[in-house]
Length: 528
Ligand SMILES: NC(=O)c1ccc[n+]([C@@H]2O[C@H](COP(=O)([O-])OP(=O)(O)OC[C@H]3O[C@@H](n4cnc5c(N)ncnc54)[C@H](O)[C@@H]3O)[C@@H](O)[C@H]2O)c1
Ligand SMILES: O=C(O)CC[C@@H](O)C(=O)O
Image (cartoon, rainbow, N blue to C red; front, top):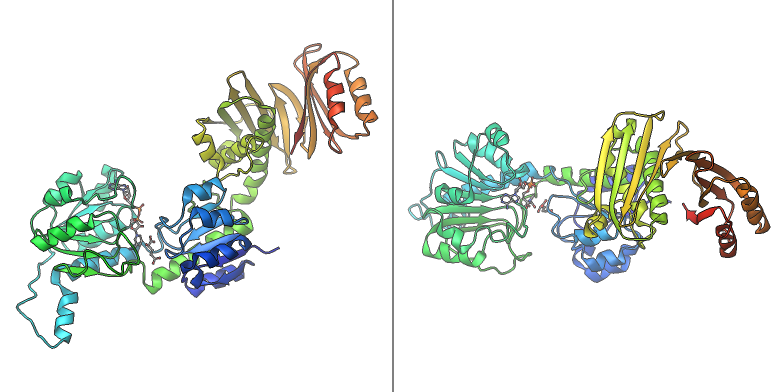
């Protein structure tokens, strides 16, 4: 059945064409972004959801989204999506991090000129027939200092444009490296240094607990008298009440805001302040940017739903469309190894260690580790997948370790998974053969070779004569057919293991009878 996607915000037509051309069924219902109850009523029908900023994907929406696999944000900010809730439910959240960056940077520059020359007010006054030539005295930006708070995708484009306009650019961004600052031609400074020196300040960070009110009343006091403030990033980065006071007192000469604490901003403390320029979150609103983000989001959602490729996900490692087909058998192997160990683990897990050797060490091991953790956790939890497993492991303080090395043994590819509990370490290793099928090749360091089917039985026993015959009779008496039988042992007469595929579920009394055989140490039915 073709996957179904809902577009619940205004998105360029380009997205619809892409979905259709990829064989994805698409419903374009932008009215649902503003009607939560209507969205709740239908969201259960969809595998994918494409949004901009109007749709609020809350915990409640996610709880109702029983089939949803992916949420794609045509844009950058994902503050309208409850990512922890989506992650916990195994839903991928993607954005399009570059598609509207130039457009938004241009908006910030346009806002800087607008406020420096009071263009909106001068426009209103002129068209009202007032011709107030002496009222609108502006400032030049040439030679002025622009302070950027946040110098990522958009901030760095603003920096390039501002340098082209002959401004001196300072940047405060804890994640900006000295090399990148040098490349961009900006001076990396601390926040207080920026506040003290900037003639214009432009914000380009996400809204986080660290950046909320980064421009507070206190920060405003540290700025130069006559400073201009531009915010085309997120409402909440600036304390709006403190800014209003600073505009009224004339300490801040002007401010240009595209974003507000509450949106849509129908009323706001900043409205009507002296030299305040406002736009209704138009930063990304150009034909070019909207086409870019719509195309990108539709491609990303389709790639995931149709081919399993993951790009620009905020809660899952990326998997390219090219690598997806090669990765799939290893994802299956990693998940099976995890599931094998997870089903045998009965006490709290302290750590999971993954060793990748040979060609698989060069693959996307983050994705494989996510698959292995899914396998480990699935027997313990109701719903877990590659999206939610790493965060569940983190929440439960399970230490996850990855080791990668070249080929060491006979197998071209080799993955060993070890689960560490308070009581013991249990490891299981596997490979993928040329037929693309995963095989188990080692359990507890004992070599063997077994494929995994839906019903398996795992036995540890002493390597003594008579075990196979008695064990086979017990299964035969219960009417259970053996499909495959694989054995391994440390040494003749030492520890032995048996891994069988059977054609149905083994009844509990048969398992009990097997477990009562004198040489048997452990019997465990496994499901895959
Ligand atoms: N107005 C609009 O329509 C519009 C359009 C696109 C993006 N945006 C917003 O613009 C902002 C920037 O987007 P981007 O694509 O450049 O993001 P980005 O992730 O590329 O850059 C953000 C930068 O902020 C920095 N940063 C994080 N925490 C910081 C802190 N405490 N102090 C200083 N810097 C910090 C990061 O290191 C990063 O370099 C986002 O909030 C995004 O949602 C708005
Ligand atoms: O979709 C929009 O118009 C705004 C997008 C912008 O806020 C973003 O974060 O990408």
